[in-house]
Image (cartoon, rainbow, N blue to C red; front, side):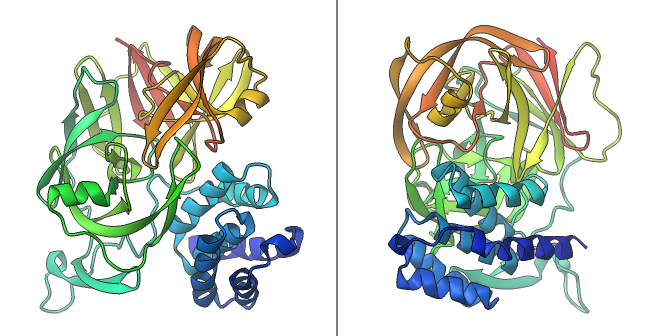
Length: 415
């Protein structure tokens, strides 16, 4: 039923081709050929041609949109979602962005939902075969590799991950293929993100073949290639074997530990103790919520969306533990939408996975997340769009919070 709903959704998207503008400026041969193949529902061929069109003309928002539609129809949900969100970030206000927004809003994915090609289900044991060691072969950018099928059956009922208390970011110890690395625990990240440069420093073999796609970050509008590859990832007592990680051509920021790794857990973050406490969904017992505040959230793809008031205006934002720069990080389009004044601001620079960017830092009178209110808060605005603003740690500083994925609420307790 879910696959049928997805196909029906994409069919509606395909039916809307005529609504998008057809400009001579974007009539490159690859683009026209790709759209023709897509109209004929030859999705595999269309995706290959449209990837070339996007690479040749990165400013072509329609080409990127049609590529996402191809990937969506191929069942490559994660790749499609990356490109839909990239359109929202890079091309706000365009027809492609409006269509992408409708699609993303209708997907209702669970956190960390990943293309089945990269997030295989546990293998079924056949006669004389051990399921734990069975082999699944799938393509990595056109090449093939044999790997063990991913299984979550050995996840612990509870686990505690410790982070460095003195650092604004939640840096945790992670092992990738038994090699140690520090990662930032980031609820704003879809999954595990690391650069080829960082894997090389760790002595891990790099992915080969054609890249899976292109990806952007929150610091600037730059794009770079990425590969999906399987790896054994261990954090605390949690071990996920043959787990999909996203490998950037180059990562200018610390590696990220995102939603996909923790999607099977309810978790709480206690900054005073420097601990992230996880409890497997469906495990016995419940956490005490007496005296706490409850803030509802919704899923937009793999990202958590909360409603935040800025100077009395309600505005949807991503809940992002990786944002340690300010109470809120936003784009200039959000500044305009919220009618904020930047007269008393200072220029700032920041860095992310795609490199450095610049913007403004200024104060707003009041910010409210559920019952949590702060006055004269600093926010930062980048020269560009972030898709949605990012709610940062400064806003909920002094609170322990639990993310309840089943009830779709964040429970805050003052510490």
